[in-house]
Every structure is written in structure tokens, then in C-alpha cells.
Image: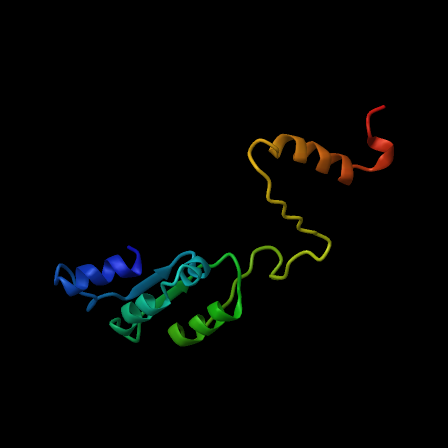
Length: 122
């Protein structure tokens, strides 16, 4: 359940969290991005301290590290792939606001701009 929906059930006395021994938070970084941290903390505050907690996150920003410190003890971090979370410095973003009518023409003009000179059709 999402944290808010779970709290709705708990507040309506449909369920309780008294016997929860295993907490899994999937997409923890996205939950924080979407503003679920207060509800997530409220859920965790109602759980037993001796629970097992798993936080799954595609990234490991400071906000997730802080959450892990608050929610877990004896933590273990497992990384698959590179653990770097910084953007590639070789990527340049170019934002252009165009009308729907001009979109196709602007796209082809952009392609001409970014294509190497020797790869352009003759």
C-alpha cells in the first residue's frame, strides 16, 4: 500500500500494524520525491522496533541515506552496477519551446545543427 492509503486503513481501524515484523519500501527515492516522507515516517513510528526493514531505491541520494539511518539499524548497502548518482557531464540539455505547427521543422533544423558536417547527406 502507499503510506497514505495504509494510514487511512489504520485510522479507520480496518487494520493495525501491531504485528508487522517486515517492512519493504520499494522505490524509496520516488516516494520521497512525491512527498510521501511524512506519511512514511508516521507508518514507521507505529511499527515494532525489532522489525526487519528493506529500502529499495534506484538512486542513493542523501535523503535516502538519512531515511536509512532513521529506519534501520545494522544497515547493509547492496549496490548493483555503478553507485555514482551524478549526471553525465558530457550531456547537454537544449530546451526549445515551439508551437505544434513548427515542431517538425524545428526538429529537422536541430538535427542539421547537431549532425557532424561529414555525415550530412549530399
